[in-house]
Image 1 (cartoon, chains in turn green, red):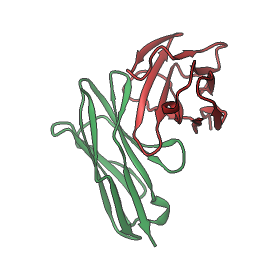
Image 2 (cartoon, helix red, strand yellow):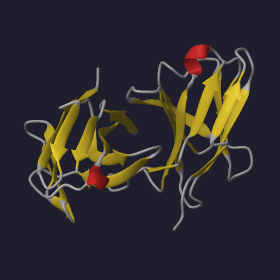
Image 3 (cartoon, chains in turn yellow, orange):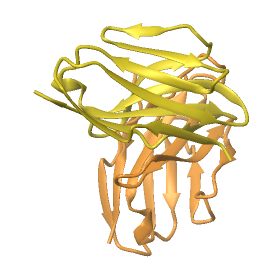
Length: 109
Length: 115
């Protein structure tokens, strides 16, 4: 059975801290891994990763994929209160997205 | 910027009633999806749709559910006889193509409350 596991389930840090969110997966037909940020409603796209070892970066956010060890990490540096959200990892397997449970990130001022 | 739009944003219905959730995918996209998220739980795949037919569906997508693309722009999810456990946020998504380098774009969701 395809599965995506995220850790930790929740995380509370202070503004300015750096956080690392983890996503591991076991799927039958890996095509890509995607990170989304979910605040109030729809997930908004952050990154899509298809190749091992190539870091994707957008401002203070970055992500990397390890296809040998079957995991990805999402880093957020110099966190701000606006980064508070649920971060979702999803794996594209057989043309459908398999979702992790998410990491709820709370940034305290 | 093109976006996926969903209506209504919130629907309350009585158990046993039929509901239709509507989505307008991005116009040149070819692949369409419905996902649901029960409050506090993970996002779950329901169904994918391509070339006017279902390409994949999950165990959740039983005979009570159906999808349709009636007019080339709308993509609807119908639940025939709603149950309390159908209460969830329903997200529509679309993709331009099925290639590796395409991400799914999500609508803002319809919150369905079955009472």
